[in-house]
Length: 77
Image (cartoon, rainbow, N blue to C red):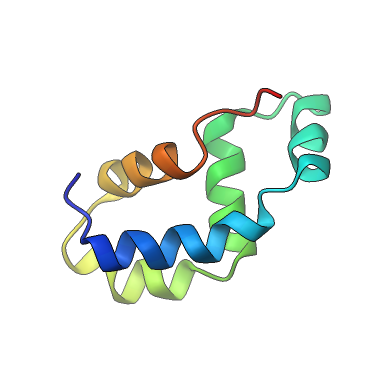
């Protein structure tokens, strides 16, 4: 993974509290996919300025997606 460890930690620590079972169940019920859920959490957690100002300076969406997959690997129970 190309993301710096400190940036990954910040992303993980900020997004994880938003990854609740109620929210996960809602996305499953609405048949939204994992990718949508992950990026919606990123936005909900207020991380878009960090993504734009920090991560996009050295990463692209595929690298950010790899990190999101490690943080939130599935929507299943």
